[in-house]
Amino acid sequence: MATIKDIAKLAEVSPATVSRILNKDTSLSVSENTRKRVFEAAEELDYIPVKRRNKGIYTSIKIGVIHWYSQKEELGDPYYVSITNGIEKECFNKKIEVITIFKNDDTFITNELNDLDGVIAIGKFSKEDVEEFSVYSPIIIFVDSSPNEKKYDSVVIDFKKAMREVLEYLLEQGHNSIGFIGGREYVGQKRELIEDEREVTYREFMKNKGIYNRRNMYIGRFTPEDGYGLMKEAVEKGNLPTAFFIASDSMAIGAFSALYEHNISVPKDVSIIGFNDIPTSKYLVPPLSTVKVHTEFMGITAVGLLLERMNDGREISKKVVVPTELIIRESSN
Image (cartoon, rainbow, N blue to C red; front, side):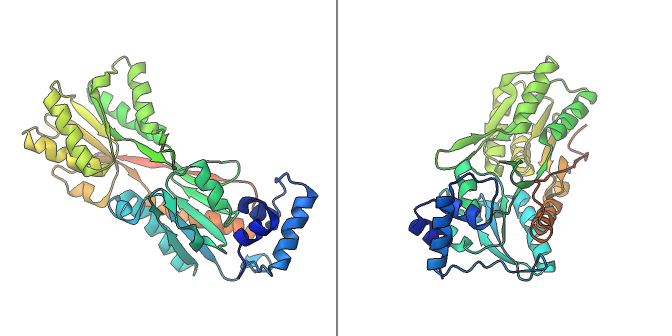
């Protein structure tokens, strides 16, 4: 069976151009000669689109779910596991076939993405990644990022608002020395840095209040190991802040361990607030205050947006911002 890549090779254009021409993308600016070459190549190769409609409704749906993590990395991050669970449950309920693609050495096994009706991409992606995905379907829903909100639907949370709520709460509790433990992430072959809005908001907020101290910021990876190592570094440096915001509950678990080893009491000596509200958070000792993210709902919402695009023919993009909730437990006062 001929693929879009086969047509692109014969017509001497990019696969992305073929996909947009065959899907009648009116925003694409190409010559009539190019369009003619693409359609002639498709006819010559007997290309048969998988998408079949009955009065505008897809009778059989197959989507690709693309993860920006490797399978091993995702299993260690409950945040993305929960988003995936939401997608898979909703697809099962809607009888949608799911093809799962994980990142492998910063690449995606995209030969498995042929003839898809839509794509849900979980995580953060480079411009090159997005262009590659668009070859396989013009319908792409992004979860946890919004690389091009004019063109693609997305489901995100408001990190800035969540961060300000945490910091305002800590100030109200009398904390003027507030530390930050977070992580850095990168995308694409060129390892482009992704700006973490929580880190940016923390810095801006603390500066505006006149209480910013660069030595109270610790940046690593979003893992329990780095949470442990960074908190240990903070303890050994001395003058420990009276409160810490930690950008993931997984990191907070590691930080708890470091504090316990140094006989530092939570929250008596230092208050801790995490982020994500993973299932184990409320079972820590003491239970972890955190920002609850409705991750399963984010996945369910992504499937709904995809079906809207497919069944209703909606062309205007949507960006859905799912609210967060500050959950106060016994790790902060």
